[in-house]
Image (cartoon, rainbow over all chains, first blue to last red; front, side, top):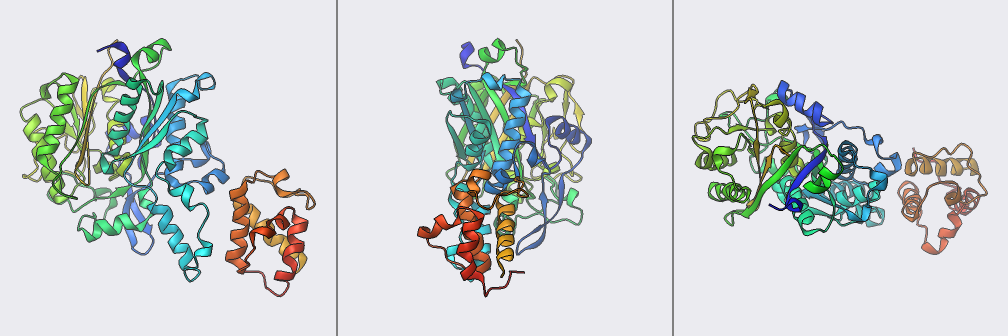
Length: 411
Length: 87
C-alpha cells in the first residue's frame, strides 16, 4: 500500500461512563469497574444508564454549554482532548485542512423532547418554542460545535449510522484522508441519548430494556440471565492522519487502520443477520489482506438482547471458530453508548498493543449455549502476551453493519 | 412591579443567558451588547424569558427598546407596573 494510503490514529480523546481519558477508561476495563448507575428520566422514573461526568468547563464557557447540546459538549470535550493528545502544533495547523467526521445513532430527540416538555408548561403555546431548537437539532450539530470550538474551517459532518456509527466515523475519516479532502481528521462517535426518555421507553416497549437490582450487573452480553440494553452516553474521538504526515512530525501512533467494511442486512428493521455480519467481517479481513487466524482480539458489539447476541455469536463462530481470537465486550461495563459505542469499544482495546492484555466481558456467569463462543474473555482480563490485530464490530438498526481492523504500528 | 424590581428581573434573565458575565458594574445607560458577549440569539432569549415569565409579547419593531437597561426598564414599566414579580 502506498505510504499516503496508510492511515493511522495519532490522538485519543474520550468520555465513557467509567472514564474520562483513555488511561482511566482502560484501567477500569482491566479492573472490571462498571459505569452503570441508577438514573432518573422524565415520565418513566428510575432506569439504568451509563452516565458520563467529564468536566464540560474544560473547553466550554457556561454560555456555550447553554447554547449547545449535550452531544456537542461531549464532542467538544473529546475532540479537544484528542488534539491535545496528538501533539499537533494546533496554532500552526491549517484548519481548512482539518475535517470532522462524527458518527451518531440519532440527534435531535433530546432537544425536541425538552422543547415539547417546555411548551407543555405553557398550554402548548408554540410562541415559547425556543429559537435555539433548529441549530441544536440539525443533524451536523455535534460536529459543527467541534468546528466552532477548535476554529476548524475544513469540512464537517455527522454520519448517521445507528449503533454502527462509531466505526463509521473512523471509516469516513480514512476515506477522506485517502481522497485528499483533509490532512487531519477528527473522527469517532458521540451520543447524548440518555437525556431523553424516548430511547428508554422504546426499548422497554420492545422488551429490550435491561433491569437489575444492582446496576453494575445489569448489562450481561452472552449471559443466560441477560434481559436487555443499558443505554449510555459518551464519546470517543481520535485524530487520524496519513502515515507519512504522522511520521513527518514524529507523532505517537496508536495503531494503523488496515481494513474496514460496511454492509446492510436488507432483512429487518431491528433483527440483525448473522449471515450479513459474517460477510462484513470477512470483507474487512479481505481488504486488510489478513485472515481470521491473524486476529488477536475481537471487540464484539453484543448488546445483551436475546436475539442480537445469538446472531453475533453465530457470526463470530462462523468466522473465528478454532482461531486464537480472544473475544471481549465493552458494553458489559458501560452499557450501550449508541453513536459512541463502536468508537469507545475500539479505543478501550487499543492499549492492548502495548500491554498485551485483553480486557474482559464482565457479568458472564452463565454463558448462553446459543451464543457461547469458545474464546470469550470472561470476567477477568487475559494476558495474550502479544497483540498485533484488533477487529472491532459495530452493528445497528435497519441492518447496518460496520467492522474496523486496527494493526499495531510497526515502522 | 417597581422600576427597581423590573431592573432586577432583567438582571436575573441576563445572569441566566450570559452566566460567564460579571454584571455587577453594568452601566444602565450603555447598550448591553457593548458591555457583554451577547449575539442576536442571546438577545432573543431576553424576549423569550419575558414572554415565558410574564406573558409579554414584544413585537420585533419594539426590539430597539431593549438596547440598554434604562431603555428596557422604561419600555417595560407600563407593561409590568400592575404585574407581581414571578415566584
